[in-house]
Length: 299
Image (cartoon, rainbow, N blue to C red; front, side, top):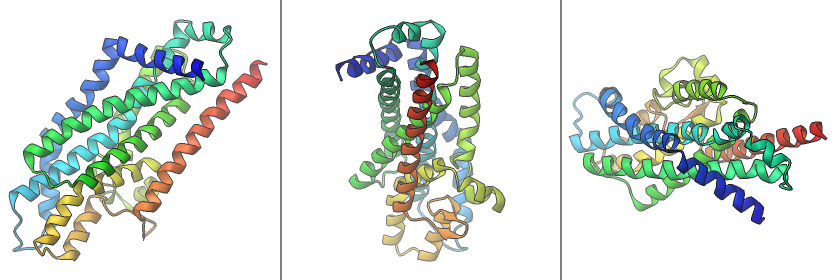
């Protein structure tokens, strides 16, 4: 066990020692937050206003709280996964610089080495994600804070689960990479495409039926729905307290994926957690199996 802790500690130190990798991972969510505020803020604002019945007025503070909740939930849903791909590049770098060969000829078990990469990447990604979460909370506090203490805890739980999922997914992908060029290509594709397929950039409800059904099979979409629901829970409660029509609230939830449907059936939050946790276990199992089969092949 001491070997595992030493390897995990080494991987974390290597990540923070690489200033370029660390600051890129840390600055990227902050840059995304600025870009989201600049370009997506008006889109989310117009989407909310368009779902209001004619003649119904809502205070600007609630509208700002709705928009900021959508923005930061989208940001965190994406960064928990994309940052994991960045922090997990140490696995590839050790192949490139030959460090992994040194580990293989040492008495360290390959299984401990593989798990230490996962644990190190998870911890470093979680540090960056929580830092991004705190930055988002500052932004929400400025624009309109409606979150309860329970909402904050649930958002933190969502971030932990999404980070576990992102680390597991990146581990399965990165284990096959052997050059920096391959790693850069994968990172670019994931950074560019993941936000769309998980419903962070545009609500899945705005896509065609066929695409909606396809995306409903992807576990990342449920992570986005969970964190968005918890980010906007306080806003919806405030609307209820102001006797806002419940059918309009449900319509708004449908339009921004706080309510999610699988082939027409509404998916509960408990089921979403089950899907997300199940996918984490599945990808970790695949990662372990890949390393086991590679070990057997080498023997």
